[in-house]
Image 1 (cartoon, rainbow, N blue to C red):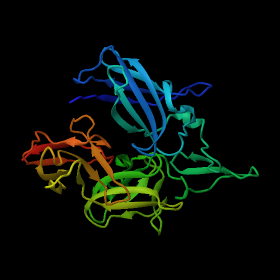
Image 2: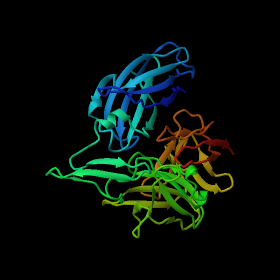
Image 3: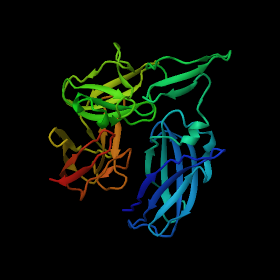
Image 4: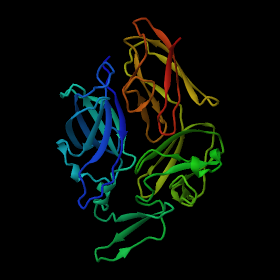
Length: 371
């Protein structure tokens, strides 16, 4: 099987310059089809900036060809390649989550293979600074040292307005939001970062019944605390959210048709999503071990024509679901990754056991054993 691997080390540089640079830095290690680093070779890349999700709207695409070093390391300045779609300088970095999709041809040609899509958990600082106001009437959001957000607005007459609080209306939550509760004794230092720079924000966790949960602007003492108002909307200094029953939960924060930001805690069981299903269908059952924190899925009746590869679906009972695959076939989940294949599949039906864990940020690992 052809295997391309990009070991991604993404960093966003802060530039000290009178003119905002139209680029940010990115590092990757290029591997060839045999799994060896491409040493001192020409490697071609196609890089896209996506909006809202790993399969969202393509805002910008460029191509670059770079020479790797002796260990296969390549340094890129995204934004300085040959643009094939969109305008890097026109990207509105301050609104909606952004994702970087990297495709690579280790031979330096144009036979690109997708090696990963990663969310920019913080956007390039210099790019945001030049587009703080992202549209008419949106104003400028200022964040105090304890994480409280305030929006500076102006009317058509030029009068400035500065709210005295930060409710759940509009885009008022901080870019990063953390969760803690009775499960960790409300310890800010072990609060967990929800996925999503903007909305929605998502996390996954096993809770026991009657667990109390709140949110934080940062994992430190004195950070702004967020909880629930009487209608369940997220507000500063609100009440704790209460978990009603034992189970593995998706935590999901987003607008619900209005300005308020609501939180959904949805108890779910992961599902095996087969890529090919022909009669007779493979069957599966899934259980969760609270001691090990692992799911076990027993799958019966897998053949080359019937369910020989799959995804793990999580959060499917909630407002939205995530699909876990494995781009590198290395036993680690990739959000929206390539379908996972069962080993040694033939035309004769076989049975397998899949053991896996799902972390708060939808990462995790898995093993597959033939029964």
